[in-house]
Length: 296
Ligand SMILES: Nc1ncnc2c1ncn2[C@@H]1O[C@H](COP(=O)(O)OP(=O)(O)OP(=O)(O)O)[C@@H](O)[C@H]1O
Image 1 (cartoon, rainbow, N blue to C red):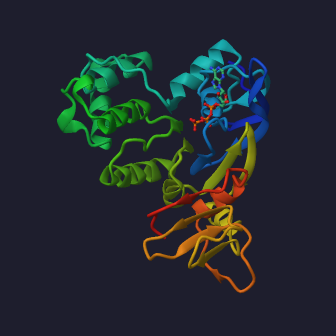
Image 2: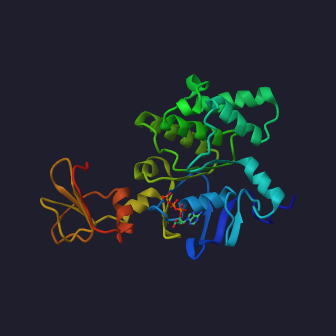
């Protein structure tokens, strides 16, 4: 097999464009994935899933270069090698609902060419244990809750301790305890392997990611550490007694004060910015809105 010279085991895209008819799902983006957890944020339709599908070799680029784990997905033998070595949790996993949790994960392990039955079953038990589903492994998928199904899909992505983990909205449907467990699991994996995850939960990014990429309309709008992203909103968040009409967004907090984002008036009581504030500010072309009852 020919590996791209100098590519090492790196994963990157260069001027990647994906078009569906005339629309650009991805519009010439370039980035490299390093170690640790990289979070992908962005509004619906920003291109997150499309990027992940390309990296997981499930979509073909219209233009640009893609390297995954040092391999070229356009070359069939290298594409197969990528699929063997990566773990992918798609946004909508295709379950066989009459399978049990064990049978489904075992099926994925077979597809990943784990041929030794005893070793494969040990691995299936390991990943089901990792996602907290040991007790439920004999239940049919159709009888599991949405959060449990999500964990079955995550277990399938963890088969074989993949060298790169791509997780498309992995925390959807997880209860707070499972989210915490998920964070522990992913942080542990990310100490050894690069992880790319997309989410709409800015708390997951703040808690877990060492790098955050904000996408919008098929482009990278921001790429930094979560702390640096939060700093984007410093001086742009303030409290007021009533909703401030100058705010791009504002909501009444649990204390009764309004928390506003935008350009504060002189002398305003500034608030410590969060990653969510910065994210909202980056998407400031969203219409201004007011929500009642959010916490500060
Ligand atoms: N198979 C497809 N055919 C046509 N258009 C598509 C297809 N898949 C995605 N798109 C379009 O590409 C754009 C990017 O979609 P994508 O699913 O990558 O966004 P996303 O950031 O993952 O969104 P979400 O947060 O809703 O999951 C959207 O405008 C979407 O409508």
